[in-house]
Amino acid sequence: MTQVVEPEVSRAKFDREVAAYRNLEATYRKRGWLLLDAEFPEVFVVFAATKLRPAPIVAAVVVDFTDYDLQPPSVRFVDPFTREKLLASTVQFQMLRRPPMPGIPPEAMAELMQQGGLKLSSMIQANRPDDYPFVCLPGVREYHDNPAHTGDSWLLHRGSGEGSLVFILEKIWMYGVDPLSTYNLQIQAQVTGVIAHLQGIPE
Amino acid sequence: MSESGNKSAEQLEREAEFLKKEIEGVDEVIRSEEKIKHDLEKREHELEEEARREREKHDRDHNHGHLVRITIVVNGQPVVIEAEEKEKLTEVRQKALQETQNLAQPAENWEIKDEAGTVLDPEKRVGEYHFGKEVTLFLSLKAGIAG
Image (cartoon, rainbow over all chains, first blue to last red; front, side, top):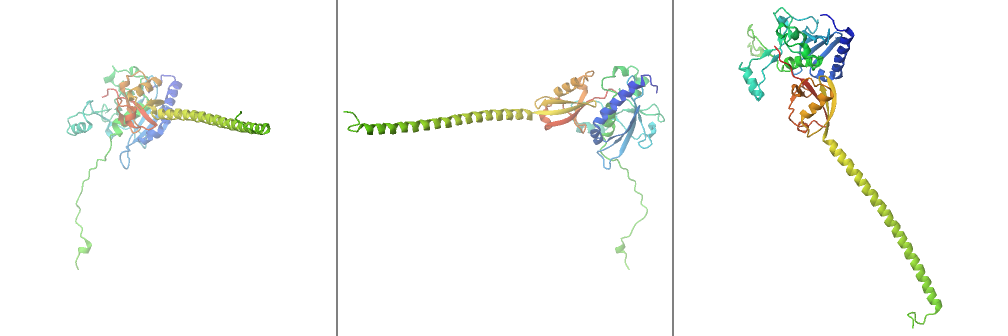
């Protein structure tokens, strides 16, 4: 990514975003957001699913503020331990969104989804499995750079609140992390033999 | 014949002297009672004044009890709004957006959430949520059309 904006301008805006985050860091930590590193132009945040016990780390992102805010921040999913960018085929994380259905109670909505009667859309998109996935959301650089969204320029959104650090992190949490409430376990049992009850063995 | 009968002038003078002293005693009692009356009036006035102050203080505390100090975080930026319990959250949201100059998006595009991220109904009144004296809420911009 190229820095076209005067670097000090982007850096000042980056510092402002990070300061706003730090101001409420304790609250965000309760949600499972852990900011591990913030050095211009990148912020590295991992997300833990706090409704689960033990609470797993389910996602990690690097938010890149290069050329901010002439350009919106870039968001890439990374390995939470090595910080290496993940390919679409290796991201085990979803951000699901349902269509708006005003007036339908949440229970009915859940039942409809379970029966497959409601089409959920994924907010994480990729051109190919071996490409880097991106968050398909106004306010994220990859969304505005995508040829499918040339009609929705970032400049129409800039300054509206979209594209801020907290906005991006909250959407990842809201659509991807917060809904996680149970572990999905698959157990395959293999019979390897039988065991006698020792006291039941006769003389 | 006078009412004093056959009393001598000396006796009459003594009686007059006695009555004079009695009158002086009564005057003294009157002065003393008036002083007591004055002190009681003063005390009455002080108590009335104290009662008025207490009533004002109570009214102030009572009214203050209906105010909720809401720290609203608008896209990461906190602002404090003192809201009455009868106010709707929509009104509180509007004030917060105005104070933080977040006016580019319609107010309906901002969801009101608590710390845990639960979405609150903007049409409900502050008092309906029983926040207590202070609370932190979040205004979160709805995600735009994606995909």
